[in-house]
Length: 392
Ligand code: PMP
Image (cartoon, rainbow, N blue to C red; front, side):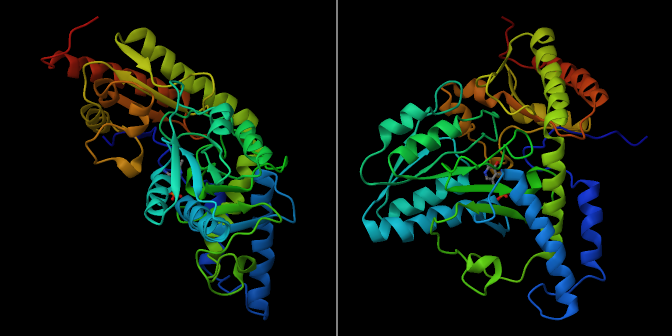
């Protein structure tokens, strides 16, 4: 009998929405024109792309005058912002200080590390035990030489939601540019750039049911940022390269669906996540939640199970057809404990015993019930064969 598979790793990537896939198919078939061509083959594509682009503007509440550059992924967006600010602000104005947090995605942290080799000073603000930095911390870290504050909107491992609006205001009050990596919040909570305090925002399609290989970068009207990829006039000259037409169409449809469903869907997902989490905590001893539970994306639960090795739990769950994660997909295979969990101030033993479950609009209650049964069985089995686990 074929085993039912249950996917609880939606912070790593999501299933492409059937509506997005259907919308894309004609652009992998008869609609193959280049939108930059003047003839009719190009014209029909331009029309569809404009519509898709509008949906991405709507998703984040951007104004017509803003730039929303469609690119390949959030990694590209984060690199474009950090390296771009280096060229426009750091090199030109001798402002050589960047503020970020110590739990950002590697696409921010490793770009910062690279900028350090070019002489930029980077402050990596430590998160508190809730897993966030506060606006006050950011305000206190700003100095006259600060060029940019880059703080994620939500963390991929804990789901912790940062007070981004307040942080953006703190940066704006000091005339400092503000960037947020919104990859893990898009499609999960409403996001708006309407109050004009956010200068740059990055997002990634595959985290909210668009295909892989497409993302977007918001640049507020009036803010200058050079392209990472110089080329033709695509995206207003902010990113060269022939448009990735089918992926843009998929992104547009996913954005439309995300905006439409955000309230009802997320209430349902939150209830399922809470059921998963509270049942585990109630029925399995020596367990707990990593990070704060109040300001969190509604789909994420990061739970520790004392006395077991996270990797072993994952393998056992996988044997039962259940997909979860020990940390970010980009770091799996790496035996070091998650730097995000360690940054919360928890010990390596607890960090190593932690599993992230992340849900989506396609997760059902029946799946959560099955997952709960399996989690119970797996943890009991692993603890029974453990030499070190002692209850209590
Ligand atoms: N930022 C965050 C917070 C992420 O979770 C991820 C994906 N794990 C990225 C950036 C990178 O996204 P992409 O795969 O689109 O490069």
